[in-house]
Length: 233
Image 1 (tube, rainbow, N blue to C red):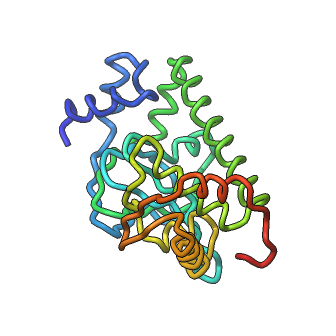
Image 2: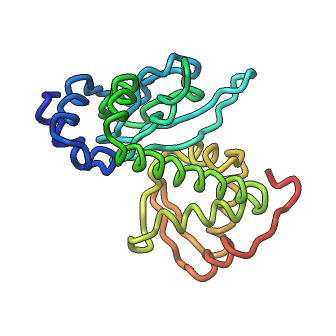
């Protein structure tokens, strides 16, 4: 990726929008465009965290592996989003997660050390970065509440409603069902059972990865009012 093309991509992101032209060019000159094939790793859990990333195309899965080798999907990063930038403020940071492309993807890899040095001259960008991290923290706290207070059925129903936001009642699941299950902290077989139950009840219709909401009121009710069911997970 050429420097001028990289500059255009950086300008579109709010984190870099307030930077001066010399600052943007400095970032671009230290950045690298990276293309990833479907399933290709960007970095491994525990690798030194010297760079952070802006996703241009595709989807990047962030995940943790347990000592037993079990995978937990932490996030699925979509185009226009950055990730791993908060690590630049730690001394000798390491990535707490692994990153893998869920489909052919392109990212901009940004030098975190140089960017942190540059922040010393840009108070506005510091506040933008702090705002972004605070927003993510609020999202994580909401997710913890969801995991603690709501059943698997609630989480699946809420996820389906989020996918339909701003769209018609038909949409394609963006990633494999097993990945969605891990993201929602639901066992794959539980996820499949919930989808089947919703289908049997006439709430949704599923053909392959295509989902059609047949009864939005019932799906809203499933997302809002179900209570934690011990042992459901």
